[in-house]
Length: 360
Image 1: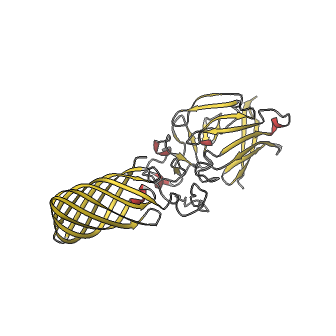
Image 2 (image 1 turned 120 degrees about the vertical axis):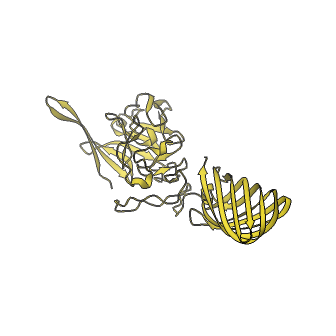
Image 3 (image 1 turned 135 degrees about the vertical axis):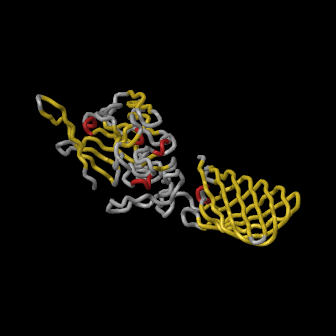
């Protein structure tokens, strides 16, 4: 169990005078209770699944359900228990009491600065932007491993994983905090609670800190199942684009660019370049259409083995098949065709490299 104590002081009569002391009770990496200096329960937090669909897969962001103030519950005040409401990024937007009256309401700028707040519990509730604890005296937000300043729109200290998290060690959520979240000051996640790499593409494992004694738990799927991968390993991904193919004796080269869509609702721009060997002579290009069993568009990134055949003069058509390993280690297979103009014919096999640039 984590042990954390917050002490607050004020300057009075030429000395520091302690005004408050809070002892935090943790379940894993999320706070579930607070006790006062006499070790009496002050506040209880009820939590449910966060944005990842699990208890703590997204660091508890969006998982707050209720706040109970034990100091008020003794007199059965309607303010003793209030219920959290969050937006799509897990930011607390309001709290309602047992009479369904709004007792706290918040509005934020894109980087978590509070634009306005109202309600009788607006000051008492400290869990606001990203469902993380706000420190009123300093204006900082506590993310477990780092402190974030919404006014500066950056972290106060360096990324614990160094340049593996990106060259800018103080950047918050790739400067796109309206679309991404950070679970605990170390891992940037997408809007489904899946980790992303420094370039913004989904990945299947957390970046581990070499200074940490233990490795963080593996990512969990939205259904709550723990696995070696975050997104569904298989599904349907369709690629639509333009393709060029050249065959001269034993040398084959091809290039294509377009947009890919997956069955999870994601889209990305892709570009593929391949080189191989075969037989024949051909120069052709046209509109290409391909489909694969990739679960997400990010799974088509990387090297793939391909085979292609082309034939025609004037109107030219070609067929392609490809296979390789996805970002989660699963076997990705697919195929397609290109219809366009050219001349000649040939067949080849080789290796291609696909680059993916996510759109949404």
